[in-house]
Image 1 (cartoon, rainbow, N blue to C red):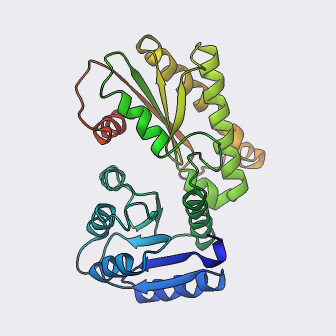
Image 2 (tube, rainbow, N blue to C red):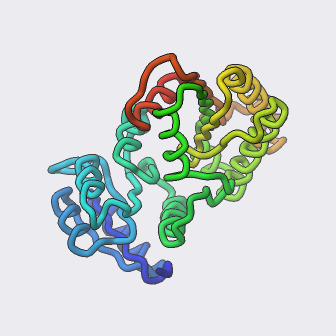
Image 3 (cartoon, one colour):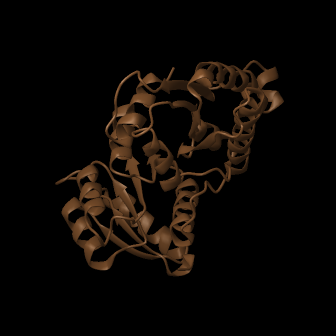
Length: 284
């Protein structure tokens, strides 16, 4: 499947946005199908099986979550990548999207170039059946879910979550290349901290493009959580141009690190999504 032949289904009730996305992605060489209602989106997806769905959450009939749930429960469409368009970024939205298997989020108003790159990356991962993040090279998707599933059956495990917040705002100000450089640098600093803590042989992967999960020995989780958090927090200013820092400018939505850790025995879990939700709730 080449990019030029990829089929995108756009489910968006704002006619101006839908028309703009339709025209833009057609110029990019994609085949585009546009619908404005959730039920029509489900029918179009199951009839034509697109290579990717761009799905607005707020729709006039059923919402985007219900559309995604139906697509994920249908054998024909359960593996089709879904990028949510949303006007909200609260944790409840993210958790619900994770539960439904969303591949990515982008918030309105969005940068069309950013959406193009997210579409390209999602299609590339799907077409090549890759299981690694295209920026950091670390495992993601099913590999991470399989490792987390091990925690449901093991009695001795620990997880550390490291989340980089506000990368979208950074990307908007400084560009895609700079944002990708940040992600690569963060992944390397996490690996260096794991090496220092003697846990480099343990697992490191992505829960999302900006969230990392480490599977380590229970005795090292707390120490590694504090070490990674401190190292990254100290390094955040280094990602900004000197002129912005030297002029003491107040930069809105600065990069922020949040982390959390979870150790076996603290509570029981019956599903991987429950583990993810618990980690997100512990972020600080």
